[in-house]
Length: 321
Ligand SMILES: [Mg+2]
Image (cartoon, rainbow, N blue to C red; front, top):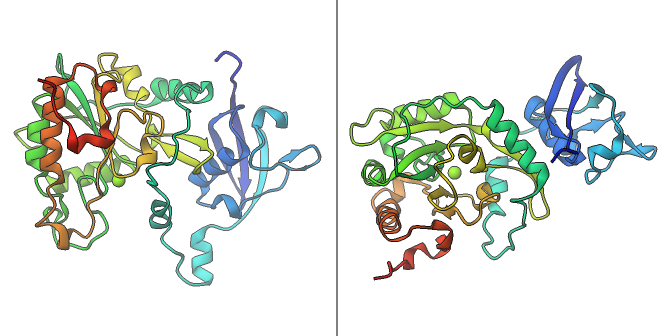
């Protein structure tokens, strides 16, 4: 890992400067564009990077930053419009999040082996060093770790409702109460911390007397990876938690998310939960969390090493007698 260098670039756009720091020289131009998007909201395909050259021509997305021989604090000139600007002059854009979700979970897609890649380990190290966790409750001895997504996993965040309770996945509190017996619980959502706190308050998860949440992680604990199947995406690497809390490892950690690519770094530790959508229609029949309570309980009691499990077949799990 010693030969991976951090890269920082100053992007000049629309009369303002944006400091892009979350990069290494092993990242591609596509990852750079993704990071610029996060800061400016100009979508990658709309970014015109004027002076980013490779061999005398505009640098393509697949080129590694190390090949561009950029000076420290290189000033990159960009031209491009945000979706908001475009919306203002034309019509409403499509809902990007939904569109992206559509190509998720063709389950047989082969998983790329990115877990061990040095470039991502460097990014994870950076998160471990710099991400500030606010621990609400301390870890307890000899517990497993359960990491939970929010949107569509615990909560239907798109349907319209008067109260949070209407959009809550059925049996949420029962599920968390049961899981808490064997698991310390972390909530990890790809949104900002303010929204996470707000949602957890709305659902009454933050102060339920029957269980305690250890801490919340937000989008800025995620890392960007460049994959063959999906292009550049943000993922939730469990190593960020494992680096800070060595008592948790792949042997005792499980993560639930409705989007499989979120656990691309830890495919064996992730369980893809069926999304909870259209709360008003599905509130009476969704029993996913009840069934998952039983699974969590079974594996906590009967399985000493979670890496031996195949979470894709969780519904057929039979504890060995
Ligand atoms: Mg989700």
